[in-house]
Structures are given as structure tokens and as C-alpha cells.
Image (cartoon, rainbow, N blue to C red; front, top):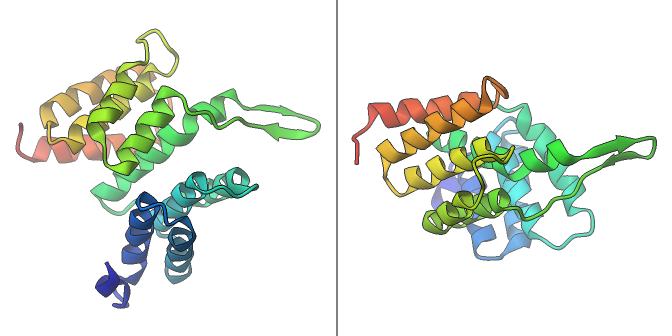
Length: 203
């Protein structure tokens, strides 16, 4: 990543993924620095905005949630260019979807509460590289819960990370049934991953 970050053709993507790596190492200041540099190099790179969001949510700054939501707005306008970026797009959905649906708005503005629900915890486990633990978090969501579609999507992502493609595809099919045609724009990334699974070897 250090070498790729010095190459003009790969600089922005390398900085974004180095930011994610530094966040995993709890080096939040340098993770933010890399994410900002990636955005400066390529403002429409989805991974760069995602890396900034991940660093902000990990940090301790007073306005980190507000800044993360602003970055979320930028990220939502970017188009993922490869399978890994589509995976991160779904992670973004897992991190923010419940918060967005439970937010409230009044004359004073919008109030949101970023809570570590099982789905958010599962997303963080995936981001940290622990798909087996993520599976346990997603499994803790009852099928009658309004967030069951998100949980099935996350479970499929955890299985995908473990190389269990058939099981991942089955979980994603359950997610699509639970969403019942909702969030069609967000589910484009899910369908992209399903196509990748269908084209690859089964396990």
C-alpha cells in the first residue's frame, strides 16, 4: 500500500485502503489523514469516503458523528467501481440504515442516535476482519424484527468473507425477500455481489 500510494495511477485507492488498515490498528489520526488525501486525489472515489466514515466512527471527536453523516452524504453520490467497493457500500448500509430509520425531525432539526445494535456490531466485526463473530451478531436478530433483511444481508456478507459462497447466496436471497422490493438503489450492490458469487467457484 505504501508503494501503491506513491504511484499516480493507484494513489487514491491505496490511500483509502491504507486508511482502513490504520483504523484497524487504532491509528485514527493517520487513518483520517489518508482518507482525506484519497478524497483530495479522487473526490468521487467511494472507498475514500467510506474510509473517512470508518475513521470518524472509530475516533473520539466531539463532532465525529456529524462529520461521518456529512461524509455519508458524499459517499452516497459515488458509484462503486469493483466488487470490494460494492461490499463496502453494503457495510455502509449496515452501519447507518437503522439510525436513519429511527431518527426524528422537529423544528430544532434532526436527531439521530448511533447505537451499537447487533447489526451495527456485525458490520464493525466485518470491517475489523472477524466474519465469524459478525455471523453471531447477525444471527441474534429475530426473523420478525424489522431489521431482519439487514441481518440476512450481513450474514451473507460474513459467509462470503469466509468463502462460503452457496451459503452467502442463500442468505442474500432471504434478504431480498425480506426487503420486498424496498431500497432498490442500495440493493444494486447486493445484486453485484450475488453475480460475483454465481460466477465463481462454489464452496
